[in-house]
Image (cartoon, rainbow, N blue to C red):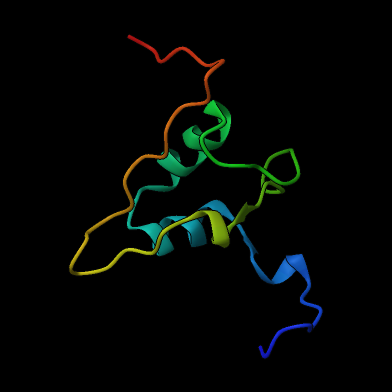
Length: 79
């Protein structure tokens, strides 16, 4: 892209399995991060939730899997 081009948001929205492959984390972790508000969820219902790749850091041999994003201020972590 050279700038000024319109890009559909749908190009960046993926299901939990694709997000898991991208980040090197299990799909269950991606879903939990979405429930906790660490990452945004788009859509709702079984199989209809999507996650934005622009919010997720890709797995790399140098850095390993994505580190957990911080919890929102209003959320209390489970003990």
